Image (cartoon, rainbow, N blue to C red; front, side, top):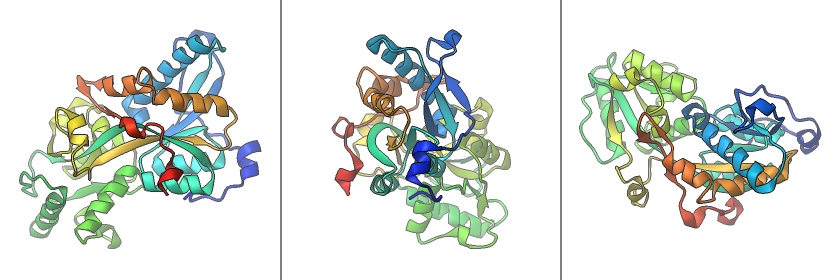
Length: 316
């Protein structure tokens, strides 16, 4: 699974150091406690959910166990980087969104536990001018077909921005393109397909400035600056106001399921497992995930109860 070579001995004894994007202290910042957990993820850090989860876990764990205060570091990376950092021992936990890849990570031995943490949801957005003339549709594949038709009819006006970075978002849009028999990235240059390798916030801002269509997760959409949303239209919402009802629908093409993976060789393995346990507690991580709001919008839904503690190796 990991795209880097790693040695279990190196991961245990000589893990690489990566500078944290942010460090979370809960209510104990004035105590300047040491970092005890390092969590690799991308969008959840940018939206602020990781901060809410980290602060909540620190406060609850210190109060419930009487342990000394500690800090949690966010290691900023996309889903592919999260797997690599877990394999190298650079992080204790990762938050990823690709169940099949997570199962392979379990097989390869650099994670030994996975818990279903929450659900995010993808959507297709684009410029208000809608140069592709997208029509309302209940089928995301139809919408991508309309994008392709628009690019043929007006080749310089219709463009689709891809993060092209092996992130969960990139994998999702690639799945949709190939399902309709297209692989626009296969051409040296494509009028339609714009490769833009960046993190979610930066990619969405670029799409807004350039007047391009793109796939984005709900967490990112509601967390960016308001001018970005004002300049774009949501052409397909893959959720309803009662998102739990949508999540139970048969068509979950645009579901973005988040799992917390516990690294096999973490230095503070007991604490990492305690974080995973707390993440799936109804009064812990689940409460924070389902109540987390940005700009008045609830971003996520809780994980399905029946899958909270399921280990991926049981699915193989």
